[in-house]
Image (cartoon, rainbow, N blue to C red):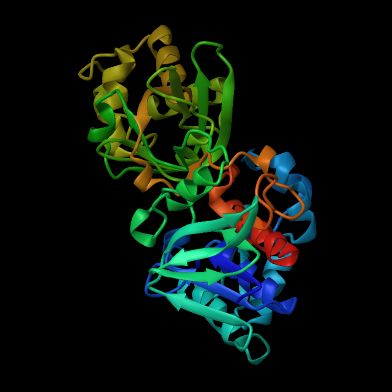
Amino acid sequence: MYDCIIIGGGAAGLMAAVTAADCGKRTLLLEKNDRIGRKLLITGKGRCNVTNCCTADEFMENIVNGGRFLYSSYSAFDCSDTMNFFEDLGVPLKVERGNRVFPVSDKAADIAAAFERAIKAPHRRELITLKTNLAADSIVTENGCIKGVMAGGSFLEAPSVLIAAGGCSYPKTGSDGFGYKLARKLGHTVTPLRPSLVPLTIKESCCGEMMGLSLKNATLSLIDEKSGKILFSELGEMLFTHFGVSGPLVLSASGHIREPKKNSYKLKIDLKPGLDEKALDNRIQRDFSENLNKSFSNSLSKLLPSKMIGVIVRQSGISPEKKVNQISRTERASLVRLIKGFTLTVADFRPIAEAIVTSGGVVTSEINPKTMQSKIIGGLYFAGEVIDADAYTGGFNLQIAFSTGHAAGTAM
């Protein structure tokens, strides 16, 4: 018999296991893969953005869904606690642009290895039992309380069970949505699941022409066409692909999109955010004055990336062969507006398997925000992506996993 069973050896489950063991609890950690932390290895493009070194207010501002619910768990275990946790395990960290925190080595494997050291540490070795290649089949209850877990045809007894099985994104890492099925069978409500922090497909074909082009300092705004409301606007990086757009700005913007096939969203890109319209017009006039006898299509190489010139020329309505000394003030004004507001139409999300996180999950009203314990089943807990809470890119989603995992581990 164990004191608690944790289903899932990802960020939330690992933090919960370490925390529960530190409270003296005999803990069984079930991981369906052959090793723990599979998803950790691919986060941050293999570098692992472990958290974001920001204030509590800034953290909450970056929560797209579930901020109020997360307040208690984040207050009890915040970004500084996460940083201290890994540095105490021998992983030096660094803070990069946007307060993003990475291992100095730039290797996500160092974070996974730190967890392995943590669960095998002498003072925890006798308390944590890790079983890999073993998935939970079902959770057993009696009179509304947890009795244990069925796994591999065996009954594993424990009065507390934590579901930390991840979402639906990157299913090859083990996040295949099984945690939601377990929750539903026990009477919990699971909100509609959708991809978040995911690339977007675009209706216009011009993205394919610009495939591979990365914009380093652009401002991307997401606009709800029905209301005209700007849902998101930020300066940063984005990438054009064969299907549409991707990159940090696009992933963050996607968190604000609901049912793109039913609603209408526009992406507006300011290609020169450092210049207002008057300053940009002056810049264009200077470029034109240096190329008076050149055609319009051959005069923009200093202003725009080469992969974008053909698209901008076409959308400007100005003849590509027209000499720049013949371009009118009205045509120039149109060009300025285009560069300050290059617009694309969102068609859809890319598949949820390509999403960084899953938006949606077990409704937070059915979970105690301080303990992560179910309000429906005694002894049942939730942590991480299985909960209906998600955030922007930048280390915030991993911090949600660590904070909720710590809360559940402490409570169990």
